[in-house]
Amino acid sequence: MNARMARVLRTALFTALLLCSGATLAPVAAQDIAGHWILAVTLDTGSGDANFVFAVEDGKITGTYAGTLGEEQITGTIEDNVAIFGFESADAGEISFLGIVDGDTMTGECDYGIVGSGTFEGRKQDG
Image (cartoon, rainbow, N blue to C red; front, side, top):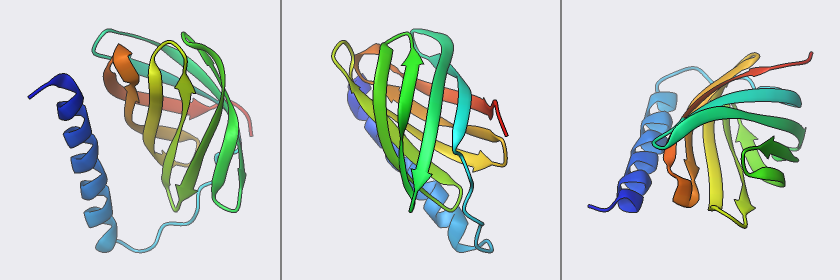
């Protein structure tokens, strides 16, 4: 199995586990992620911090990314406590994040295109 297929399968499994676990729990209130976040990203190839500024309206995420890959506009969605967001990088391809939000913290998995995949932990910086 190649690395790309392994990442896709791991992400699908993670998503399935999230959906299954949510079916047995009480509904989770929508999380407010608007504001500045710093995510500590750990990839197969190394680690570093990514800065995000999120805006949310009607469950749709917009905002900016600033990090190793430069500065980019992001888009995504949030439902209950699950945030899915990302951007397209000219250097690395499609970059995606799937995170679980708990107040002012977020943890999850990420895929940095050709750079590699990994995990992240983040904290809201304001509010």
